[in-house]
Length: 255
Image (cartoon, rainbow, N blue to C red; front, side, top):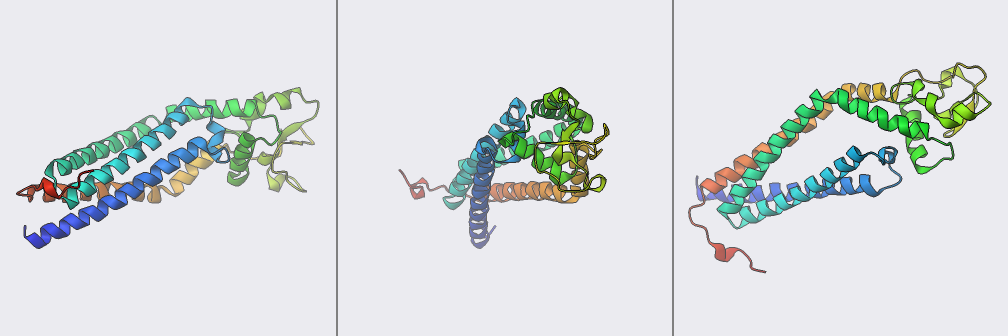
């Protein structure tokens, strides 16, 4: 490979890793937002250990990606073979981990659905209707996705307010506008005229699954693009590593 090609590869790899560093910062920031922001929808699942673990994993992946980007930038700009080799190895491990995670999610989706159902049912059983942060998050989901409960309206049967009330109450955000007239409340409980609630029959689990199926092309496209970018980084790093003949560590800044 000529000197011009090596130089172009070096600076292209540097730019690639700078983007990788910024991408890691976005992932870490997203994980911190999910963990700390009390106004986001994730607050509905705030008491779930698996959800908290997932947030910590996002933070860890983001921090690791930032470190990877830094190592890649340093290895590329100063032509340090050991750093480029380390960068290649880490990218390979990340790619394998992503494939394993995707396979695990696909084959364990029923287990994940059962876990989500347990979490949401617990939230609905303790829904008092006082417009708290958790309630606002779940109200937002039901109202905007035209659904009721996780598996269906029966998830609300264990709610203590509904059970103990002398009136026929149902969650207002489940209300199906085509079955009722008048204003629809954005939170709390509404009174039904008959034992048959005027609510959506579909659960939010089915609605989320339908959304994923509708947008499966976009999801797969993003996953494929990420995998191709990682493969490109691996190819560039190994090419540059193989064409570095003499390493000059005096070029590396000492702090």
